[in-house]
Length: 117
Image (cartoon, rainbow, N blue to C red; front, side):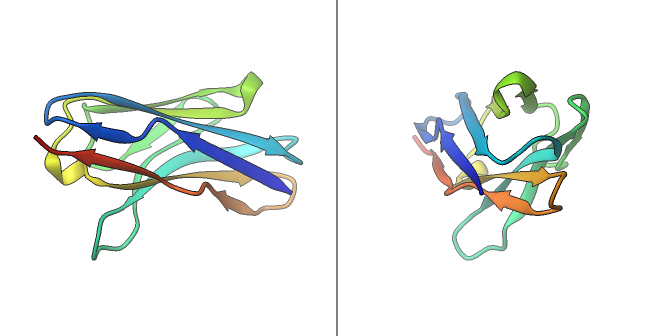
């Protein structure tokens, strides 16, 4: 089994920054991709950013230039540095890990990010 633990969410003012972390543990062996998704109230879950092979990144247009995804492969951890936060970034953020050996995507429990003055 694979277990994901997220941290770093909270309340921040517009223009502020937050850093999310997601640590994966368990029967991982190797990872195809790691990523972050978010779901705002009344909306569908949407992709925020993904990273493959440690360096190939993909971002939603709405966060390009403001968010940065990175990994610490030795710790099986993925980060999301969020700068210049806007009210519309308010959502529950979920990490996702695509494990190679079984082809399964695992989800974290979610962490709330609220951008408000």
